[in-house]
Picture 1 (cartoon, rainbow, N blue to C red):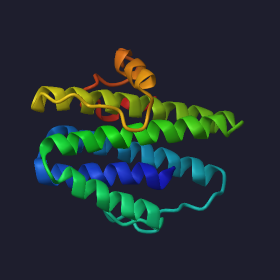
Picture 2: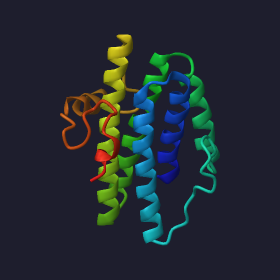
Picture 3: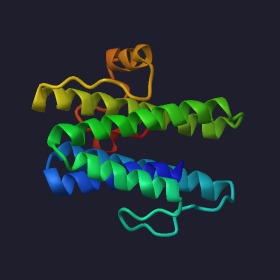
Length: 173
């Protein structure tokens, strides 16, 4: 989970460097908070931290390294592609967190996963609304079912940020 949060942060930092759109930097900062929250849980339970290199774009998991490379390449094609990559990453995070919540009976981890999922839902709303506003394109879900995606978009998001990638630290409880 920690390297997945780092993946999101690193892709967003790379896309911010190219496109200079604030949503990428703002959500990257939020992902950094998520990464740190997972690190605290790992330390609390005495588990090894999979991040051995904190440099942007460097991963110990070869699958995540390949995914990072693919997502940055894809997001470099156009602003619309970059925003769609952001939405796709959040979809992947939501699906992975749902699986993690099903597979844990630890209340602390369940709470952490719930908080991370709430943040990812806010980020998904932010990326899709920015995609629509900036490019006129409508994002189509690639990972979540259309029903789950529509349900997330229909939520107000008032438990966290404003759905514009402007929440900063507010998406932490």
